[in-house]
Image 1 (spheres, helix red, strand yellow):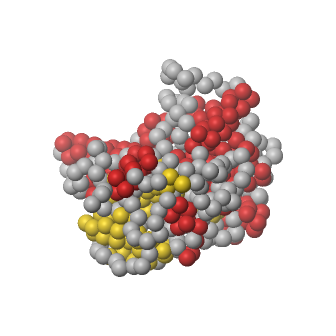
Image 2 (cartoon, one colour):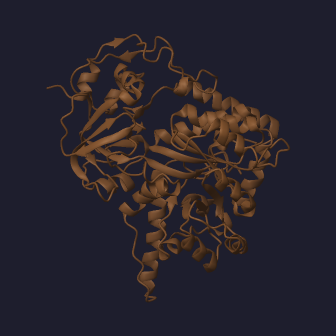
Image 3 (cartoon, one colour):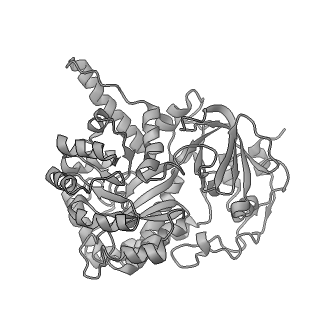
Length: 514
């Protein structure tokens, strides 16, 4: 019997089918910020009956554009039925058993069933040799900046703030759209299915609308965090424009892109607006513990708020966070590398209080953009400190984090920090079908001995073969779907060059940079 790779190799190439002919990008987009697959692009032709091939890398080499069956499946919407067959399933749900080999049935946007074997009359993906895992959730990323990825690899926190303000002043709405689209596609490619865009580029209502449009076009699940203008732009309508956004742009809490208020603790006076509109709050809280005491005194600390960084808070502030039921977002590499109000991520502080943090990328202008790095960095830092304490014999035995712990921070706790724990973050019937398939047979992951260890300590973005968001395939056989990466590159480079020219920032290709 031929292997899936051999089946792909011999498959005839046919002209593009009508499933994408008039679709534009995600949501029917046709503007310059998102280029759909061009008419006439080659696709593989699949027979309608029988199981579908496995998403392996030989398939990625042979199929240069979206296969016909993917177009058919994605276009089906709530009529969609797909069986993911034979995967090693890591559920991250206390009520759903992990399976060394099992099936996941997807109907519409939801998981319908998970079992060792499912008999279903529908198309099926052969996922043998793959680990199925809930998609990663990033609870804090500044998406608009990322046409400047690794622009400032050595920058420190205060210089970052200065440079970011300088760039923000000249950003156009189009630049924001392209930055958001680029960021989200990079996130999807590395297995992030949900992110919170902490958008402090609200220079005008047009900038805010463009940021949201970039999120929507990408196909990612996102929370748009409406934040202040990074550069205090005179045309900013913060915070009052959130009423328009809630009414006219993002009125639903069940849509793929939803809304929250991004307001730091020094802007806590705006928090009641969010609560009036039924929105969650996300707030940087790196320092100024006296403000946390004031927020508590005013009765504003509640469980609808996620606090970010929390590096220089005192014991009283930490106790207020715990007692309020609030959630945490720790950007381990950001705190450590940029030196955010110190430089030591408060991992152990949170754990000692019984708080389990979510993870976030923060800024790609100097940092990696994938969740594998965040999981490993947190695991290494916490275990290093715990082992050092144990070796000193200071009388306090601190448990080391496990790989399952940090995977939970990247999935379950991310969902909780976004108020979406009932929808995403783990595999369970009725939850949204946000999942990734990770190659367990690649040269850097084989042989498979421990599934969670492979995800956290062995795999990286190149091993994310397939990404599904709300039942819709966004990546297949190692390739992003719907987007021409070459065209996205042209848009990103043009946006970067515009901002560099208008802002006076220097962009050295070599050397230490900023």
